[in-house]
Figure: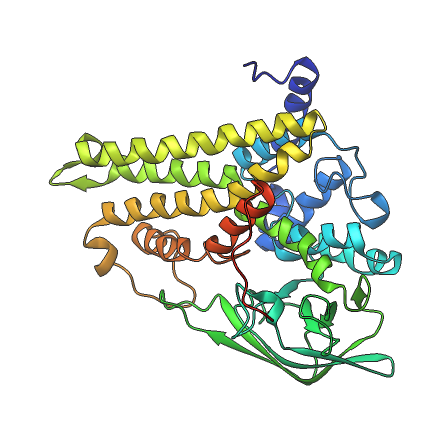
Length: 400
């Protein structure tokens, strides 16, 4: 198996590394707020053809042709440099690809450029108190009244709802239709009368998620993506990008590297943790899963280069499921290595200190339990893999 990229791509890598020496910023720019520094450097990456590569220039991207190997090199080198590249927030990572695929031209022109520049922030309105894994049973309603959709109901587990400018969400617009057929995908301004946001306090003490209440809130009729009543099909595109984000193997590798660093520093029974046979066995087991995930990703990369998209779909679905389990293993061991420090050194507050090792590790462990639900619960994901990927019969359904 030849894993070399070839001369052309190594030239690209060298050019990219030279560009990335510009991060962190220096001089007067280094005194700017961090968010502004990231915006400036991300803009330079767009101009150089490195950031948002396949988004057309007309919508604020680099307008470069698709090239999976260049994308992989960009992912590797931006990660190595710790530089701001493609944003992983919901707007750029999930909504923008959905609009590029299914949005109107007016929606692309209006929403994509400011979202990529970080001038417009988004949250996702999918889950409801009674509609999680069975998302199609959602009840939040959208009623067309003149030139506006009038919205009522509730969304829950809504990340960044307190600060988002807009929401992309699913609402029942055809109450008489079957549950999958009666849903519309709407874009909703969050700063208006009729929308109330309330924090959800987590086990960690933080409040990273929110519930959102709609009481005759409004959005213009043209803010529908796709056709009325066909929002379920549109949402499949968004969920695909969310699962890819959650299942990113680079994130798992980075987390494993952090675990190794902690294992070198921690003490078990008065000795370095790495000298303990039990710890070494658990590290070896976890590394086996991490390397298997990396190998699977390389297989998907090779299939994508050859244009074999059907060979990518099943491993892609499996990567999300697989990575959530491995992430939990990583942070469970990190948590165990802390011992009593994981209990005594943590003073939880909404803005906890991430540069303090015990609080950061404990927070990451608690957070690692969530992705098994985010982007589709693991039990539902297994059903999808079995039915759509392996051709297994569907579970018996009760009569409707």
